[in-house]
Length: 279
Length: 330
Image 1 (cartoon, rainbow over the protein chains, first blue to last red):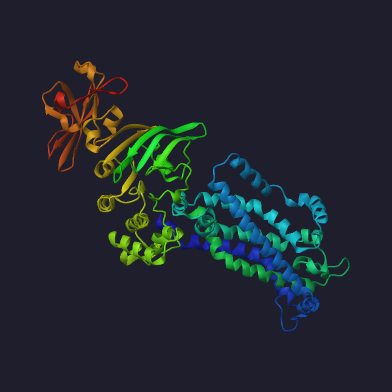
Image 2: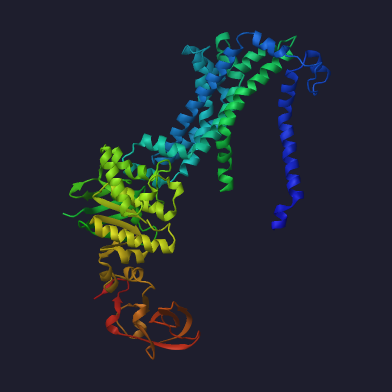
């Protein structure tokens, strides 16, 4: 048994598979980043080549930054993502706490209803959502996006967090009640810190689709002042001419903020994902 | 007026009734133990006294005041949980002081109360640590300390020793008994372990299926059980139940404690099926045709061979008679 576990061949094979997978997963990112540093001719001549002294060119980045509003797009994306994330985590955790902690009529039904959103794509409701936003005068505001993304992220958040919150010791919450802590204090000070890994998991799974989304910014907030980074990059993609340097540079830049957010959450995330598996 | 009075208390979860009309009176300074098999409702009853579960009907009174609708924090109680339930983000000092801080007690007083409780429980050197840095026994002492600091009218213990290993359990049991003497406080203690019940209690409440089977002092329950359930539950090894008809007696069941069965020649004959030598005592299991497996407890080391034929006799004055429903015939 111990021999089987320590076998170098096995460990090599496992690493080979993992490295292969990593390579496949990172390949598109690699191509995007590498080509963003090359001139147009070089991109088409040899898309897989690393930039050399000959082909190195920052024209893409110059175009993107010269476009002027690019920092605004960045800012819009960040505001929308962070605000949505905040509301998803706050309301998701609160709903999950209520579902897992309190006995009331229709508890299971409410939980199922909230989880239903996982299976039904929110884009099916686009027309109705647009009508609602027009009626409430929220078109071309970041608020519209934050509201939609919060709705989009909540089902998964409630589902995952309520499972985790069921695992928090009842005795601990009861001890808090006997010591005179309010339900809010119990929620924020006792329960939330204990489900932090789950919160990080939810945060990452919520954040990435929001950051990458093109659909709702295009429909609900296409104005210059409210464009997000994904929508902003589209200006370089034309029907007849596409400025590939600029597109690739914009996409490379767009990776950075999510990468930073991911690094913040990742330590917790790994604990969250493996929580059920390892223990 | 006692420290705690329960009158006709019931509890239902949906259609299932788990507590079916419990009446109880606990005097000031008494150590009262709820004991029973798992699922008998003892923990639910404790949680109802604490206010963590609603009372479906009936009244809970603490020191004369009806507390049915009072939040747990305002009942002036303290509870110690099986899983310790210490706040993981607070130090031992803050864990112990939190309830007082919530109640708005001045800082100096909190400090004094915490130090004093820590001293009683030998925790003074651990005050700045967090729960994760403590051993199981230390955690449970902190949990007990947290209860002491509040100076509650009522201490509630929910199987506090179940998570500790055997040696620590005995030690902590003695500690709790000492605290009870020193504080003179009223304590309600839930356990499924009848040894804990016997050694700690002034008053034992035996529960089964949400009903109180018998209430009394430990030795009263041991020497004078009301029914076969209490007779079988209190005392280890369990009481032997013999079919009285086969012995030519009029009652239905005859209960004899293992120490009151005498091997030698007697009216019950059987065959030794197993012997357990514990040094101080020897337990002999005798398979009989009429009464099934009987346990005989002998003082000191005794030699028996498995499959050896033995006769058993008993002193009729030491036997308990029960009717067909298990009720004691006196």
